[in-house]
Image (cartoon, rainbow, N blue to C red):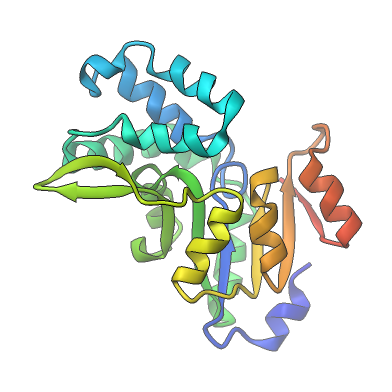
Length: 223
């Protein structure tokens, strides 16, 4: 599927992956939000936080993903990152798709540089990136400033979904040789890349990204 690209050699060109549903099964950002609410790490905002997120998600994905970080305002970054590290190790390490590690090894040997661009909170994605050997500075996710060790809650815009993914790639002067994604909000990133691969679950109904990908001749990788 990527053999022709590998044969060209990477010349340090970037390859960009979405995270949830692309590198691993499930949504680490949503599951983290549930956990933070259950442990009452969000103070008074803990009550019904996931229900509020779902309400927003029905109307505006970008606003919902921003809310998932805004509600963390005042949380100590060290506590958040430790929680994310432990959570990923316990719940998500075993969900990494089998194709991912061998693929990353091939890309690295061929001198490509892997990046992640996700609409989940950056802190939630970092443990997965580190497990896969992707440097933390090559992780783009929803984030905010940290002031005196605590999250400000003021989200850095645009949110990394849909066209926002392309905007953040451009801000980092990245023109991907290849991009991987699994959902509709990855379409802009895949269309921006030189080549694209759609990741889709075995046996599930095709979403519109799969349909659009087939129409564009993008390979479909069943994970």
